[in-house]
Amino acid sequence: MAAKNNSVLDPNVDLYLAYVGMETDLIFNRGIDLPGFASYPLLETQEGRTLLKGYLSDMVALGRAKGKGVILESPTWVANRDRGAAIGYNPETLQDLNQKAIELMVEMRSGDTDIPILISANLGPRDDAYTPTDQMTADEAETYHTEQISVLAQTDADVISGYTLAYPAEAIGIIRATRRFGLPVVIAFTVETDGKLPTGLSLEEAITEVDEATDGYAAYFMINCAHPEHFDKTLVDGAWMQRIKGIVANASRCSHAELDEATELDAGNPHELGHALNNIRKRLPHIKVLGGCCGTDMRHMTEIADSAFIPSL
Image (cartoon, rainbow, N blue to C red):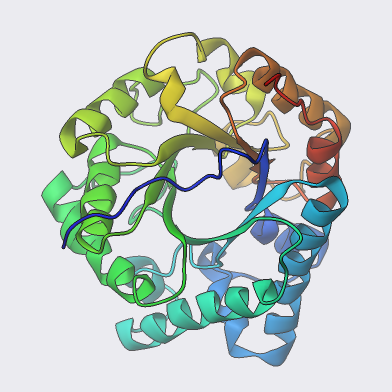
């Protein structure tokens, strides 16, 4: 299928806010068990749907209050075949829940025209994001992720977003699969405390490899699930850097290994996180998406919005 225009962000909007920290907030702050770190099972109950609506409405309200765009991320990060099977979900049920996730988001966006709101169909990795032990080839990744993407392509999602990816081949496969359905796609890599991907590549190497293999089809790249301190010094001038347009950061400075072993939430300092992200944006004003990942909640998102640097026109 021929690809559509792969742009996503409105150039007239100075900043979009994005939030993917819901799971840690639910587990640590609200005491809700999420087997497999999956939030899509919440769609199966009225109580769960109410919780999800709360996060979505909070984001819309924040965007409206601060005059910023909002990217609503679907609770489908690990709603793929292997990760679903590990907690007892079959492909048919996953298909239904992927579709219901986007339907819920469309419902929450309906009628709200005060601010630009994008619906992002959120994909995660097939394997553990921090220690991928069974890396796929790009062809294998395309085949694997096509199953979830083909379902999401039938919805009103505005963009497919591959989050917390650890190596280029999986990103390439996701992009190729998305392009087959004519949808825009965003790729978010995660990095360790040294600013490199868990597999050891630099962001520059990973982005360059992905763009060369996909004719630069991705709308843009992001960094997620890391504290700004971990990657700030690696963000230097260059063509590859212009491809990074978003940072969705952790509140904690802990490594991924430390986060995996944590029994209490490290929420960091919301004010400090907001300023750290916006200091990066002052230096790199082409970055248009800022948000929170693990350990964040609406306190962090509010600080990020309040600290927002407005680039000169």
